[in-house]
Figure 1 (cartoon, rainbow, N blue to C red):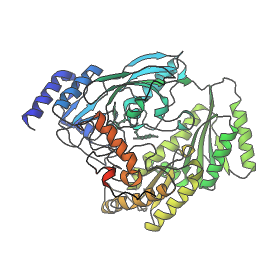
Figure 2 (tube, rainbow, N blue to C red; figure 1 turned 180 degrees about the vertical axis):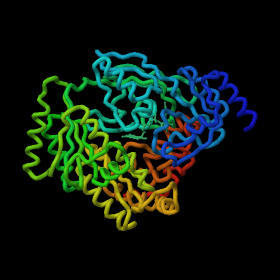
Figure 3 (spheres, protein in one colour; figure 1 turned 30 degrees about the vertical axis):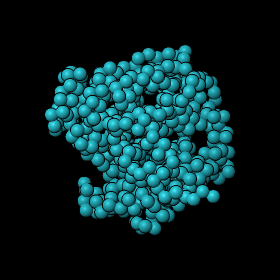
Figure 4 (spheres, protein in one colour; figure 1 turned 90 degrees about the vertical axis):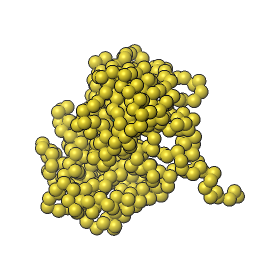
Length: 494
Ligand SMILES: Cc1cc2nc3c(=O)[nH]c(=O)nc-3n(C[C@H](O)[C@H](O)[C@H](O)COP(=O)(O)OP(=O)(O)OC[C@H]3O[C@@H](n4cnc5c(N)ncnc54)[C@H](O)[C@@H]3O)c2cc1C
């Protein structure tokens, strides 16, 4: 570390005070390691500013010394976006900025600091009889700044949209240290470019989100949950289409679970049991909800289920009799994710296609990976009501899966090969190689193969305009030194 860097670190330490610095080596480890252990980085300084002005001062000082800044929320991201790359990098953790600044039930809005944990925002909304609908497995530890920066999806997208759709305004510290106050609860504001959208999904590469005004919704009074057994993935999609059309827009979640996922969960996670008597190939987990107190939701759900049973679409099913039973059914969905790590190595994909092509996509992906690695165990699940499939491939079954034994390691070396197969098919189907998790470093080098060169160059132009010195989370999503689109061979104009 040179003296210029040391001087910058010293200035930053002074700007945030002792409470704003993490010095303990063990604690620092948390900030340099990705949640699944796929990446371990390096940092020169971990700062935890307490206010927007402190963030601005840190960014200004880091910018003067051209030091990379890596913003971090709950560090639950799945693409390595929050991992610092070297000992010049400053991790800027937003965790101390966790105040709810104001909440306006009449405006159906809430203004929060970036470090607020998602579950805390949901609770705050409930206290004023409102709903903040963003919901995902990591909601107990991810932060809204991270959710906005990854444009997180989750189980409520079907009805309420992605995080991008839930944001009314942002406060951002720009790479030159300026503060942009774009907060506000306006539902309509056509005064030029919608700047907040630039920072949403930017994974910290354009600035640091310090606060946000978010949309609230009427709180559901009735929620019904059903766990339904299906013979084929295509039946699930037929069920989805019928449920959506019949529900009068009350279908708020539609998740697909394969038999293998339920078996993984029951094998490894305490308290998970198959709610049905016989095994079935696929399951749909659905929620319908209504904010009207007496909506007869259960009666209409049961009538609908009667119709689809008669049509031979579902083989069996259970409707939760209480909120507790509903939670138990949803627990299967979460436990399936948790259980995969006990089944050895898993190569994961987060892809999307048009909703109408989900079943075809699952069939094609399964056939292709099984042809390449005959005993591998594909696990296709997820938010299929949004066309989003988590297509994870577990290593072939064996008796025990000790931590990183040779067979697991050997399986994981086939990641690139499987990525090429899966992403290749998804691209052929007009889909996306990242539905909701982002790009980070995980998919950065693959992105140019799937995104038009013109789009990549536009992204670089935006990055250069806002962050010419490339200090804001450099090397994530895109790199600036790629050849320009113009420098590549061009198709001859016809
Ligand atoms: C069990 C589990 C379930 C999950 N389920 C889902 C799911 O259903 N849907 C989904 O979309 N994701 C899911 N995720 C992924 C993850 O939770 C989300 O990506 C989440 O939005 C990340 O929030 P975070 O606060 O942890 O961000 P981090 O991991 O800390 O950061 C993510 C990215 O955002 C940047 N960043 C963080 N804070 C800021 C800020 N204030 N300003 C600028 N940039 C910032 C970081 O630099 C990084 O690039 C899941 C993860 C786990 C572990």
